[in-house]
Image 1 (tube, rainbow, N blue to C red):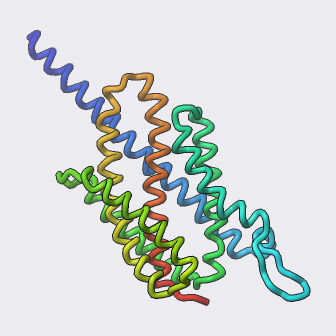
Image 2: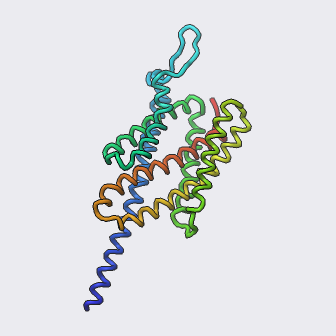
Image 3: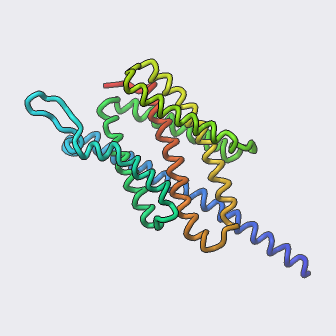
Length: 251
């Protein structure tokens, strides 16, 4: 009887740990959905409302030429600063502060994406968004279910991301449309693979959280869920933007 009681307790602990892991994973995708929703709403509102777009673009009344406003530059470049703040200040920031920065980042990124509505047709934006969602969903499922250890591909993929950034800076001077298209195809491949890699990493983080103790579960895991959601958000966003660069129909 005593041995059976211990077995029952062990099974109970296992079920609780599995529940904690799944809850963490669900929280990550919930925060990612929140970020995508905020960005989509901000992009649509600013991209389709002239009075709001005027905050981003200044029109010269004499020449009719458009130029970026101060708020436009803030919307374009501040998300990078917010990402760095979340990444390097994770241990110092409180959970409330981290959530606030994450929400602000999502909204400002959406505002910066509103220029897409001026460049591409609505139908191509919607179709590329749907295609990105399909690709992301398939790779997320593969990353969650595969038994292959994807951690060894992490450094290679990060080198690829750095290479994309450097190539993008070079192409700012070259202004080569062919090179831009080539980078778009490479970018889709890299961030598609990163999706599976990040999902598997997040799954393993969730599986290891229960060993950290109750206090860490309540505080640190919530903060880690925000950062993990940010990584998945960036994967999806880059897949979408590269697809739009290749298949998007310009106005």
